Image (cartoon, rainbow, N blue to C red; front, side, top):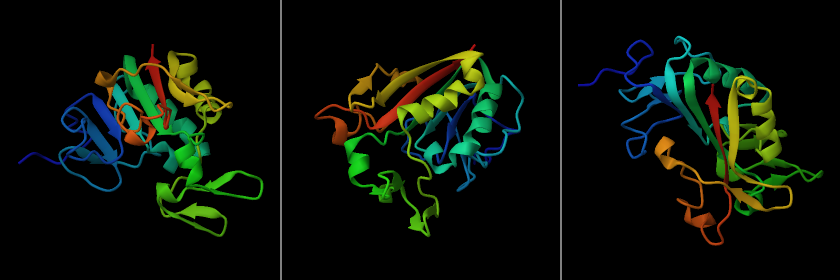
Length: 210
């Protein structure tokens, strides 16, 4: 029987933020970081807390559909810690929902100012003007995601490439994604909802540490 994964017995240099389930392509190559389970493929870890490992330990850190559940103002220190633990040449691959996507906008709730305040498809509940119980607490766009990276160590000690995103005019920008570096589910390559017409559903970013 395999031991429960911990920071002390980390068996790989690839991490995956969120529940790493047995049907995920990363299941045999990454270790998940999750509040919900502790088992041979997942470490019980709160993503808002620093990782208790030395700098330069990790080759790949991937986060898919996770950071929209973390308050925007709390994300800066998390990006800095990801940069810290990456090896030189290491990759941080981020994907979050792009709320310029028609599918996401059409299911969302707006306030009187025209701002999205709740996405029922993202889980949680909307009560007393705020999202509770684990739903999306911010609604990413190119500008808000780019600002996170521009304020992070990747801007000064690394490089950032925005691979998929939707511009303010609604045009999808779709640069090639090397899926051998980390499978991303909600793209027109893998999600039939945005395959025809082919358009962006997730903002996908590759950030490299130099």
